[in-house]
Image (cartoon, helix red, strand yellow):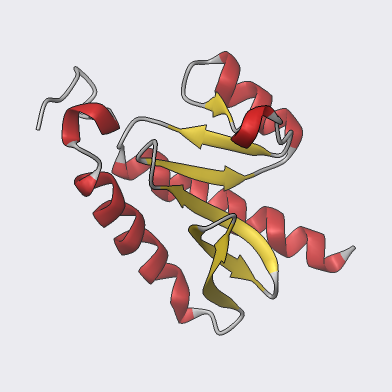
Length: 123
C-alpha cells in the first residue's frame, strides 16, 4: 500500500480494502455500548447510537463518513482533512467524508461523532 509522509493512504492507493477493514475494526470497538449498533444508511453500512446516525462507510469512495457539528465539518473541509459529503449532489452540512485512511484520525472522529450523537439525545 502506498503511503504519504503522514503514514496515511488514499482509498485509491489502498484499493479500499484496507479502508473497509479499518472502518470495521474501529466501529467494532464502539459496540461495547449497547446503545450503539450497526445499520445501513442509503445502502451504506453505518453505526447508530440509540437510532441516531453516527458514521458510515462509503463503499464507492472507500472512505469514512461521520456526522459532526457543522462548524467541525467546515474546519475539516477547510484544513483538507475532509470533503463535503454530497451523495447525489446534495451536501449534508453535518456530514463529512474523510478520504485518507488514517487510524488515528478515524478513531478521533468516530469518538467525536459518538459524542455529538449523545449530545443530540440530551436535547
